[in-house]
Length: 419
Length: 188
Image (cartoon, rainbow over all chains, first blue to last red; front, side, top):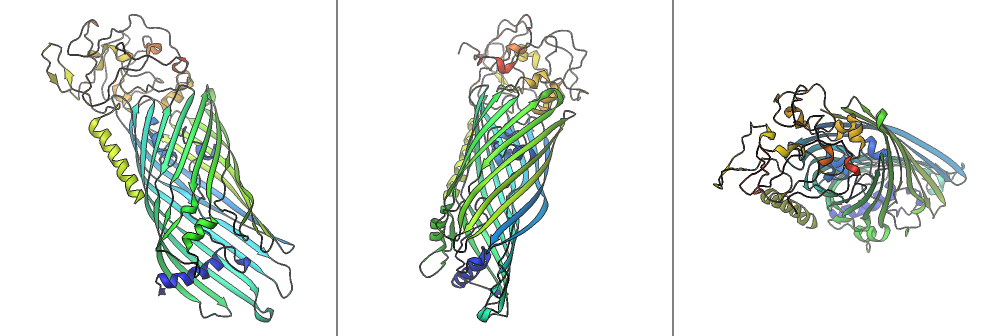
C-alpha cells in the first residue's frame, strides 16, 4: 500500500474523480462530495412529517432536530429506531434503459433522554447515536451492443452517525434552549466497474474500490419559543464541521495499467453552517409545521488545498460547481386522542447542492419527497411510530444525453419507551 | 476558527446561565424565616410536604409546565401521562385516600402509584384541583429568588415573599389551551 502526499493526492484526485463520479462522461470532470447534503431522517415521527419537526419535535430525536425540544420531555425515555431503505436507479443511455437497486436495513437511532427533577422549569440531558447521512446509492447504465459497448455499475453505501450528548433548559415558561455536542463518524464504500472501448475498440475495464472514513466534532444549538397556544417558533444552527477523511483507494485496470495499485491519504473537509428555522401551528389535535433549512455547500473547503488540475483547486471547484441549498419541509400531524392514534404526512423539497454549471451534472428534476406515517400510543408508556417516505430526483449528463433517475423508498420504525 | 468561536460561545452562554441562574430551578431556594429576622435556612431535601409551606401549591405545583399544552393532554390522560407528567411526581404522589382537603393530606413518600392521574400534580386532589387557576407564577431570574411563602392560615407571610391566599372553592376544570395568556402574580 502506498502512502501518498499532497502532491500525489492531486494526481489521485484526478484519477478518482474520473472514476468515482459517473465516469461515463469520459472527461470525468464531475465533482462530487457525498457528505454534502444527503441528510437521512431519524425516527418514525420525524420522517412521517418529512422532518418538519424543528419546532414540534417531541422525542429523543430532538438531539438531531432541535436540542431545545428535549426540554419538553418529562419522563426518562429510551428511544430506538430502525430504517429500511431501497435505493433504485433507472438510466437511459444510447437508447437502452438499465435499472438497478439494493436495500439496506440499519439501526437508525438509539437515544436515552433523562429529565432532571426541577422545582420550576425544565432541565433535560440526552445521549444518543443517530444515523443522519446516507451514502447509499446505485447506478447502472449500458449502451447498445457492438464493439463500442459501454456499461458500468456504481454502488455507494454507508453513512455518517452522530454520537451525541445534549442538554436543554427552559429559560422562561415559553422559551427553551438546547445544545448538542456531536462526534461524527462514518464511512463510504464506493464501487465502480466500468467497461468501455479502448484502442481498436478492445474493451477496457476499470474497477475501483474506495473506502472513505469520516470523523469530526461538531456542535448544534437550538431554540424554541411558544408565542401563544397556537404558534411556536424554532431555530437551530449547526456550527461548521471539520471532517477528517481517511481515504483508501484500490485501482485495477484490465488490461493492467501502470497506475493500478493501492493508495491512501488523509485530508480535512470543512462543512459550512447549517441553519433551520420553523413555525408550528397547533389547533386542537392538529399540528402543522413549516421549516426552512439553509446550507451553502459552495463553501466546502479542503485542507490542505487540493488541485484538480494545474489551475483549478478543489475549493474553487466547490465554489463553481456547488451551490447553496434551501430546503423546504412541510409536515402535518393529526392526533385521534380517544384511540391513541396519530396520522402524519409531509412533503420535502430537498434540492441537490449542485449549481448546474457542469454540463455533465445537470439537475433534470430536483429532489423532492413525500411521506406518511402512523403513531400508536400504547398503554401510556410506549409510542410506536411507522413512517414511509419516497424521494426521487433525476440527473442529466448533458455531454452524453444520459438521464438517470434515482429513487429512495424508506420505511422507518421507531419505539419510544417512557418509564 | 469559526467552529471554535461557536463552541466557546455556547459554553459561555451555558456557564452564564448556570452561574447566574435562570427560570429553571433544580434546587429549592433558601427559605426565609417567618419571624422578621431576615434569616434564611436551607430547605430540607427530605421535606416533600410542599403544602406545609406553599398553600398555593395547587395553583403553582412543583415541576408543573407553564407552557401551552394541547387540551387533549388533559381530556385523555394517556397523552398527558406520556408527554407531560414529570416522572418525579410519582414519588411525591399522595394516596388515593387523601380526600380530606386541599392541603396537608397524608403523603406516601417514595412510593410509585399504581396508576397516574393525567396532569394532576401530587398534593392536588381530583375534587379540589383548581385547574382553571393554573397560571404563570411570579418568577425572577437568578438563584436569589425569594420563595413564595404562605402561612398555614393563608393570610400573612414575612420575609419579602409573595403572599397568596389559596382559593376558597375549587372551580371546574378548564382547558389550559383555551385560556388567555395568564397574568403574573404579585401585581406585576
